[in-house]
Image (cartoon, rainbow, N blue to C red):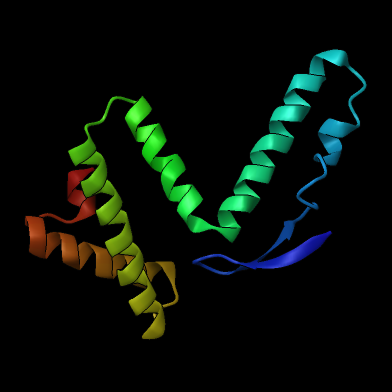
Amino acid sequence: MYLPFQSRLKVENSLCFAPTRKASSASSSPSPKAEPFKHLLAKVGYERVQEIEDPELAAKRTRAIYKAKGYSEDWIEKRMRGIAIRDELTDEWKKRAVKQEQEYAILTAEIAKAAFGLTPQAWG
């Protein structure tokens, strides 16, 4: 079933499955070797649906990933705070009718230039 999904840039039609069912392409594979992959897809899909329902789960998963990669607690806290601030900023931009990717890019570049003296393109 295709359902409309609002991304930051536009409304897209996305293929959707019930959270308790496996993706049909993987489910249809008769190979016993595919079983672990099917279970992994089902587990990850279920976890992401749970994270949509409870965003705190996504934050906990993100923290665990950073910790497993060896980042310090201080770095993780700063990173998570930066993500939250960016989300608040983009929410405010949405309220003020910023809709196109180009507009976000211009605003982001201006902030970076003011804060660091360089635009993201200059970092590249």
